[in-house]
Image (cartoon, rainbow, N blue to C red; front, side, top):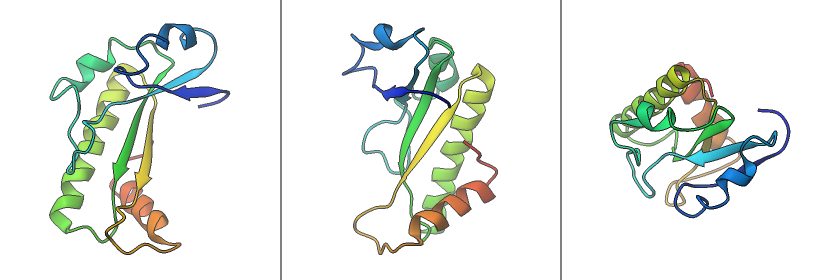
Length: 127
């Protein structure tokens, strides 16, 4: 992703999406069902189909509550959904952005996000 960009979602930004499409900006659009943990997609099982309706410069954005100390099963579910996102983006020629958000109710220090990213990259998820 190079240059200027904007983050818009389909619900609240739908009216202005066309103004930023085709003007050289990248447009990041969230694809998750808000508040889902483990992750669920707004498009359900039709993520690739949904992404095919997007212009090429639109980027799938995933704000993801992820903690390196989450229970193993939850981390595996989260990573599987991120793999699905990666596969859908590859299939539709879209870039994707993962925003790691550490849950406030779990311990956090200066290494928490780095450890979470390390686990994501170790799972061959490379945004």
